[in-house]
Image (cartoon, rainbow, N blue to C red; front, side, top):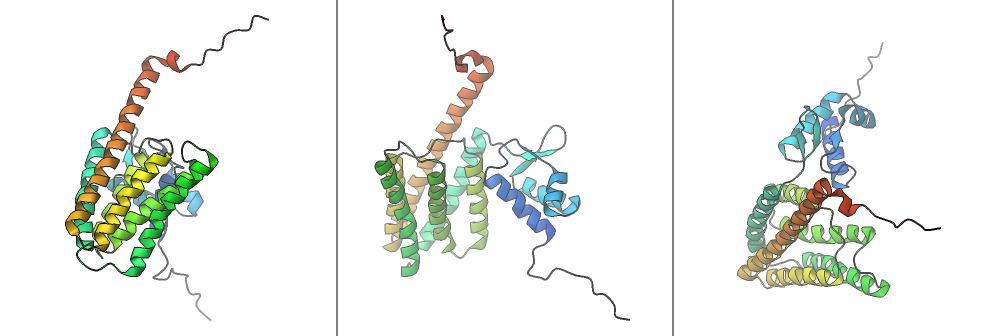
Length: 260
């Protein structure tokens, strides 16, 4: 009588815990779960067709990484950044990216990498041209998604050239936290796209010229500019939130009653 062999996942097949980890991270990254949103072990277990144990383990890992946190009732929710958190994340990002771009600029840039980086840069000008042609004041949701892909892609590719996987992992998680928990901002304007393009082009030109000092200064200036924008957005959001709590009538639309 033949024994039935139990089905075991191959070494290349991700574990349930790993799939749960990536699934939760994607829900947060895509904005399906916003800051403060609760995470249900039961719902996720049903979605992934698993028990709650690997879900719980994945959530603990994301808690340790700062993406999730416990609320007062002991449940798990998507974390919310405070002003000091934003400052610390940008300080970490600046320290690692400035160091990394200096290393990248110390050796020749492969033509293929330069072409890919330039392509990502040029997408910003494509978006800017679309705004002009459609007479739009700022990027819409679909255009903003393309902007994020180009912006993050540029930084991720540049950092990958260092070959340091630990730095890449830390920077990836740091950028994710900043992007996910940044105050929901309006889309970039044409002038803002041009400014970001100019920053990126200066970084790329310095790296291609093997000028480490110039590349590091350009990266530092770029990240500091981004930090100021995020902090201004946070301060504006905080003021609006306080006003809505204490003076809600300011935000209530008052439509004059009809005399008819």
